[in-house]
Image (cartoon, rainbow, N blue to C red; front, side, top):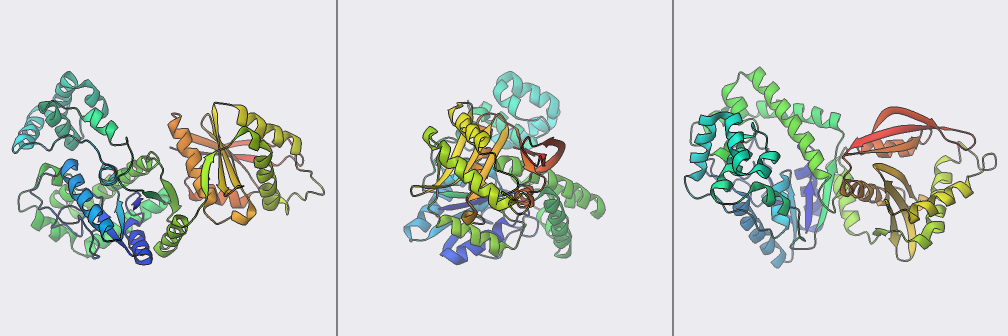
Length: 444
């Protein structure tokens, strides 16, 4: 099974359709907004047949438990037909529900959600949150008072003798039901902003305002009411609606990018290019037999040689080795120290008995990433990069730092495409010819 996740406007659907065309797969949506019918423009539904798109009327109260049952049934049917399910979407909870067998809280009985929603309206956000804090402090700590949808769900669960907090914890526990390769689409934040604004303009041209007007003339559930842009285009003048909608979607995209970093086993792929190219990389990675694993102490000399070969290939034209000797002793000692330090993580990429790349992560730092020149462009560097960042997240880091030689333009492009930004810091490398290191940072 394949899963494709990413922020809004990252091109998930286009990439997933390209992958499906190449491998004979079938799409299953993991999008909490696209489950509703009647709003194909607002929710950006693809004309390609996709399971679990437009399955419920707007009056229907959706739940993760109900969606999970449908998703598991759809995926199992695709697998039984000898085809590959491609789960695609930007709703993290729906994605995880589709991939894993989870014990989820029950759907609310008829009428309960309306009663709780009415209570939220009557009490207001502050008093409703105080009530939740009194009855379920753990859930209250996780939900903002103004997040109406999650506040209503948390109060529902209190009435049912359950809690939102442990339910969310369980969503990331356990194995997937079928072997799954999970890919995340990476697009620079400024490009996402451009795409969001362009998509909004296209939605207006295609008649989103008329679509919303027809939809809001009927009954709309609490969960459907949370669809981005529904109230904006229904209640505000066009200029104000566009401004509010774009701001809302930008915030959601930032939230999705943070969520993506926390999906176990996710491999990021550059999506700032045509969808066909991104899909080609995903298919190539599916066929790759490279194994990522923890490095062993006795492999210090091997990983040293990987760094040496990679560094000379990248920089020999700037720092000729006949003029500037590579600092063998210092770098060799560094790897020996790294492999004996239990606070850090050294990860190698191995193909058979041969190590082709290495990455080190320690105390909030990506402390080194090197791949043999013959593997440049193969995706090995990106996989090591993602694995190192996941190790930092697992250790509790919320942002990461690294140093890159000012003259190593190839490495700088690699990191900048993955969301790293210069932080203004510099340092002089303590080896001749004493080049300049530039500091980079990235939110996790």
